Image 1 (cartoon, protein in one colour):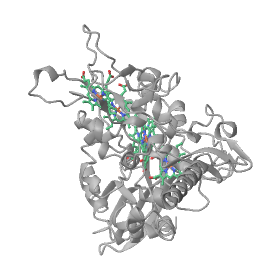
Image 2: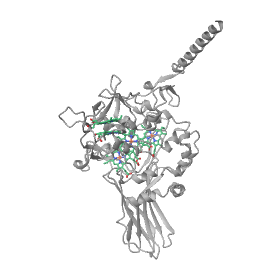
Image 3: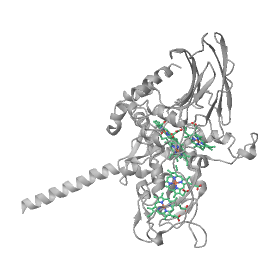
Image 4: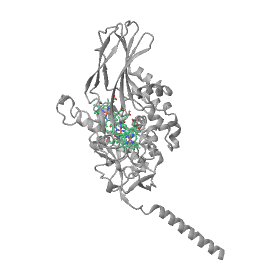
Amino acid sequence: MRLVLMVITLSIVVIISFCQSKDKKVNQPLPKGSIPLNKVFDPKVAPCMFIVPQLKPLERLDGKGTIGLKAKDCGQCHQSIYKEWSQTTHSSALSDLQFQAEIAKKDVPKWQCLNCHIPIQNQREYFVTHLVDGDILKPVKKNNPGFDPEMKKEAITCATCHVRADKQGKSFIYGAIGRSDGNNNGTNPPHPVKKNKRFLRKRCFYCHNVTKSPIEDRTLCFFTTGQEWRGGPYGPGQAGIDKDRYSGKKDCVDCHMPLTKRKIADLDKTDPDKQIPERSSHLHYWVGGGVPKSFKTYDTLIDRGFVTALKVDTSRITKLVPGKENTFHVILENTDINGHSLPTGDGERFILIEATLRDGDKQVLERKHYKIYREMEWSISPPNLTDNRLNPLEKINWTFKMKLPKELDKSQLVITALHVRLLPKTAAFMKNTPNIDPLYAGKVKNVENHYPFSSYVFKEVIHLKDNSRKKFEMKELIELSKQRKGKTQLDELKRVEAY
Ligand code: HEC
Ligand code: HEC
Ligand code: HEC
Ligand code: HEC
Ligand code: HEC
């Protein structure tokens, strides 16, 4: 009896202390100097300091259970859109090797990077409620019992743009068509929908337009694409450049999610109750500047709609004088298929135009280059040091001089344009970063085998003797870019690094 009592007492003590220790963990007293996040940053001014609060699964309208929030769940019915999304940079915004290397660095506010790259609370093991002394490198973290590891991997997933909670905490879907009232051509989904086209179309600005850093002393993705668009010909209310043709005519979604005709859900076609009409539907590819995040995705780049906005006009290269110094003119233009600067986004990105003079033996005689780029000062705002990127519709005349050989017999002038995303020196830096998530560390070690650093977007070979030309098609350019997988791309870009 005594023993039994002792065991009971002991177990009670153990249980109580266990509960206490657990409680202690959950209700951990805040460290001294903790300031709530919304007292450090104004959510209206710096939305990227906050995440979308935990979302519950969608309640089915027919009462038959719930619909999960993962892209995979949506994809059970929205198969084509799911397939498109799966190939995008949005779906790989977490597995991106450069991103993984950067968030492993010590002095980076990782939680803050994750706010845009995995922005929903469901995707977070922990989330940040306070900052000690308001310092972004001293976050006070709270464990998230509702963490969904699968949804985390999906990065910028369907729910990022489409799912929010109402005042009662019930999840619903933002759509732009609107539920049918029985008479109109509205939709008939099994999940709740609120019609709000504006909400959906404004999503892009949340992440692609951080024009002013809320933090003065740290790096952050400083992307001004929205501002570039507003100030450009397609921006609302722009006067000047052919207003009727451009202003207010195209926003981010018009260009990056073009329309097609199809059923927007792919339900069982054999069940007549499930028949749905064809509609105007937006492709979910968000193709950008043509440097994909894997070598495999080069293969679908053209089908996904990639067209370069850069026009390289070499038609003014005529009447060359052998044995003399000649002046060359190449016109570079950001064409009207683009709505912002070229290039846009990350400050590390640039476009490199090169003119290479080769003799009959393919020896390089001379090389000239022009770099289109923006140099950023990361630690202060405003961030631009240099910016010669092409504004929308801007055209420039790149002029250079070269001395031609006496015999033009087999001489060639090769003009190329390379869209560069990553340089070997940054790759070396990535490789030397310790503590990268083991899931990605192996790939980062030989990043050149997995991650395209740049893509050719133009190549023309001019035979100087008779001015005959070979201009490469996009398909051939993609093949050239793809072939550089591995050490080749490191070697090729080493030269470029010196510019
Ligand atoms: C069980 C099948 C099913 C699942 C799962 C599902 N949907 Fe739908 N959804 C539909 C159907 C059916 C429609 C209506 C199609 C129509 O009428 O043309 C629809 C319509 C929509 C619309 C357009 C609504 C409007 O009126 O503008 C959006 C947006 C949408 N779904 C997003 C999602 C997202 C995001 C998920 C995942 C979180 C999801 N759906 C999961 C079946 C589904
Ligand atoms: C929650 C943040 C977020 C939202 C919202 C968002 N994006 Fe993005 N977008 C990103 C991130 C992060 C990347 C880059 C990921 C990477 O490089 O790994 C990206 C990449 C892109 C790219 C480049 C693709 C490429 O080929 O490299 C385009 C184009 C793009 N987004 C367009 C849009 C448009 C249009 C919208 C609005 C409909 C939008 N984005 C909404 C975060 C966002
Ligand atoms: C970066 C934001 C973003 C993400 C991520 C996203 N969508 Fe969309 N989606 C939009 C926008 C913007 C529209 C079009 C709004 C309009 O009509 O003006 C749209 C439209 C739709 C529609 C309505 C039909 C159509 O094609 O116009 C469906 C259905 C849909 N999305 C489903 C999905 C599913 C499923 C996923 C994930 C696999 C997803 N979306 C991911 C922004 C997004
Ligand atoms: C008039 C069409 C148009 C509009 C409007 C437009 N874009 Fe683009 N965008 C393009 C084209 C074309 C490219 C590819 C440029 C190139 O050749 O590198 C591009 C490239 C991009 C890239 C990828 C950059 C890279 O180097 O990979 C991002 C990100 C992007 N756009 C986001 C946006 C966002 C966000 C908006 C709205 C604020 C927007 N775009 C508005 C046409 C447009
Ligand atoms: C305000 C939202 C936002 C925040 C915060 C943010 N990013 Fe990004 N990130 C983006 C967007 C949008 C893109 C894609 C831009 C583009 O393609 O033009 C991107 C792209 C990237 C890329 C790919 C660049 C490339 O050229 O392909 C890396 C790497 C990256 N981010 C790292 C980080 C790190 C590290 C942090 C934290 C210090 C961070 N991001 C914080 C929005 C954000």
